[in-house]
Amino acid sequence: MDLRSLIRDVPDFPKQGVIFKDITLLLQNPKALKETTNALIELLNDQKIDKVVGMESRGFIFGPLLAERLQAGFVPIRKPGKLPSTTLSETYDLEYGTDTLQIHIDGIEKGDRVLIHDDVLATGGTANAACKLVEKLGGEIIQCNFLIELPFLEGMSKISNYPVASLLKF
Image (cartoon, rainbow, N blue to C red; front, side, top):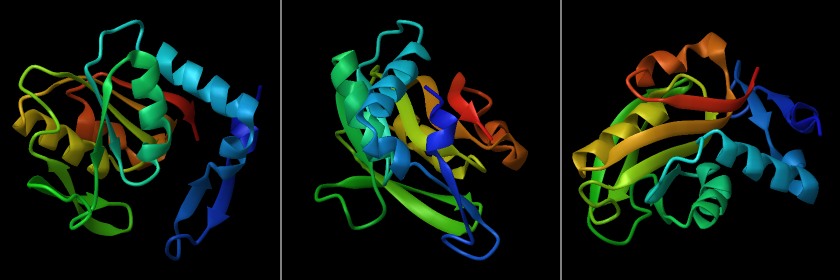
């Protein structure tokens, strides 16, 4: 299946000059959803994972699917004010501004083997912030994986200390 054909470009979203990679066509197709999940699992090469961390909001789509398949827990990383218990925060730059992410302080235990998952690796700010949060809580990052990588934005440079894999590059 050509997964690339199920990802459309949306110009000037969320702001002028940004070309958003819309995965909703892929998500609407059950066969593509299953194939994508399987392919993301294969990127791990059978490594043991204790927790899958997914970033708000599109990391919440495949993150729990991956966690279930890996028999691991799922830990959400969210924007400020969205998690109900005590959190740790990290501010980061992204391709169209700045933002902050938070994780529950009890989401990761010391020594947990962690997969960081998000839909797109763009400038690397979100992934880098997630890595920092996981490491502050004592987790070991086994891999950062992405459905899509935009190499021209050089996001890999911000997370080059970690194993990184992406399914599609645009």
